[in-house]
Length: 166
Ligand SMILES: [Cu+2]
Image (cartoon, rainbow, N blue to C red; front, side, top):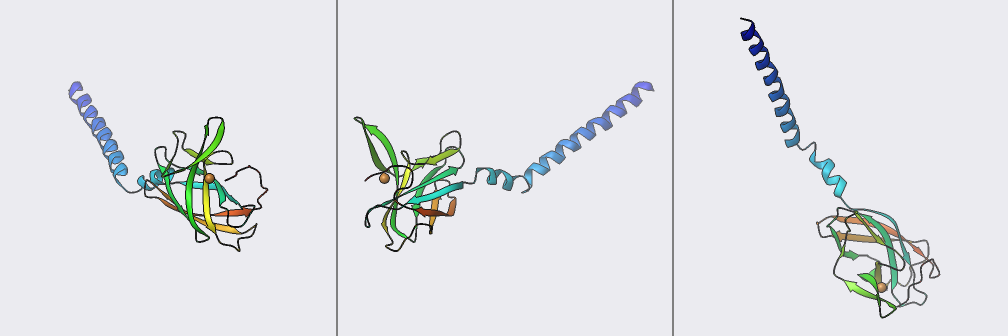
């Protein structure tokens, strides 16, 4: 009699656990969880700025901080204020810093891709002649993951920090 009661109690407890697990499984299956995860890996950009060229007709350099999922990559940038935008990397070749056009700039494992003076940067060619310091230059970024992001970069005078010559 006693053992029968306790086994019934155990049966109810087991049912409770199964129901809780089922509840978790259902919660995981709803769309409630997924947008939050997608948002965590969606690219974000901070501190975008463009250093205007010292002479008209020369390209401008663009810098920004990207936070995105490791393994994702910046693959294209366009701007209504520039004829074309290239992705450039910098590396030391025979003791001289050289820049090179890249088809993609990969997001490192830490999830942070930094485009800064002396390193990776954007190169804006055929800049509109009337771009002035202080203007916000719209940039559209496209990532390997398919994400697209529109940001604006503040145009700064040619003398702004970070030497860069072409
Ligand atoms: Cu460059």
